[in-house]
Length: 156
Length: 100
Image (cartoon, rainbow over all chains, first blue to last red; front, top):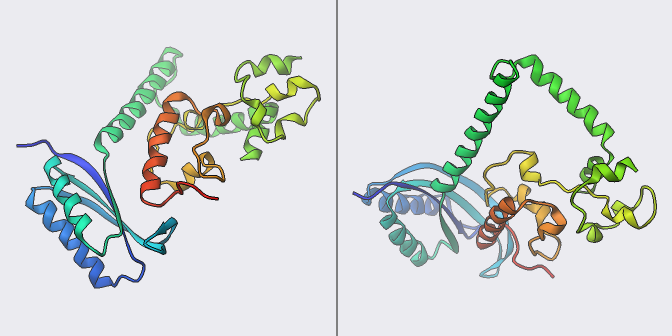
């Protein structure tokens, strides 16, 4: 029993691909994932997009993103398959669960730190609705007093 | 004078700052003007995704290279994350390797 991990798969097909071919491709991915006991969490079709550089003399491509849960052994097979299929001009598999977990940890850490800070000051742990509004106004005032930040924003 | 005191950090790197820094109050100190803060820390972005081209774009100058953090002001942790995100985005042609 191998551990289930989360991966993201992005693949690019030529822009003139038909709906059926695209569905067929998706089915192929589903078949492999099923075989390894994985699940597809979501599928996103980004549609036609401009490529940042030419691939096979094409300047455009259809992007599809699949978020997949499954074991690591599945990846090798997916990778091999995608490399063989002519309809896929480029693909990339990335493991994301660790990074997302890390981001989640950072978020909760920040939240608890804020709550603790507020409790120490004798406030309720969560900022109230009115406080949130007021803080935004204060922020605006601070910006006005701070000439550097204004310049920095304008530049970008 | 207090302006300089407030500046405090981020002294270096102002040199490459596309001129804009030098407008207020002339003199050589003006190069040290820019207050550089890490965009990802300020906006509390925990995960830099390779899919978000809009987020990456400001750190990829015309040539297509990754902007050094001495210029962008990104903190070391986030620059590392940014670097992998840009490299991944390059692989799937969301972002160029080179443009000339």
